[in-house]
Length: 162
Image (cartoon, rainbow, N blue to C red; front, top):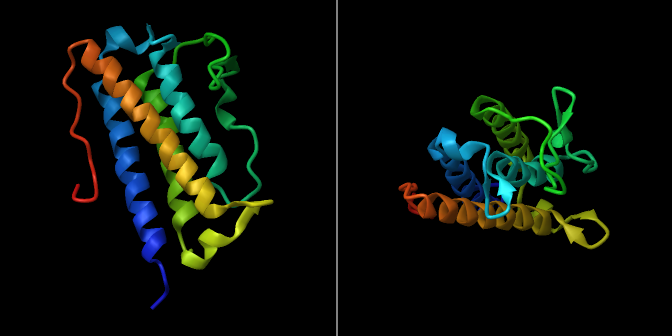
């Protein structure tokens, strides 16, 4: 049997966290979608949360995210400026689906030995995976707080037990 104990655990935790992010997209009311919340446009923060995983969870050398522009307009996923356009929930869901597919491929056909291998220099596949997991969880907590502040009931926290 192939050794995938740690990889399976990381994958499970990543996708539980990712599910919570998907839930945030579904829960966000239209009146909050394009408004600043805690300093940034709500949907733009969602794209930011997705962009890291989309960029870094890939076999080829990580490059700047493809989420810099949408339909030729700057959306500034690093939150350095306000976006030039508004992305709809369907647009962000599309980016979410692309990111999820990249993450699924990231875990596919690997084993625990792969986690030890450097992605570059001393930064391993394990480091990269846990960095993306932490980044998504950070933003899930942020979005959860913004929604609760608006009186919106958020989804349940998902853990190992689902």
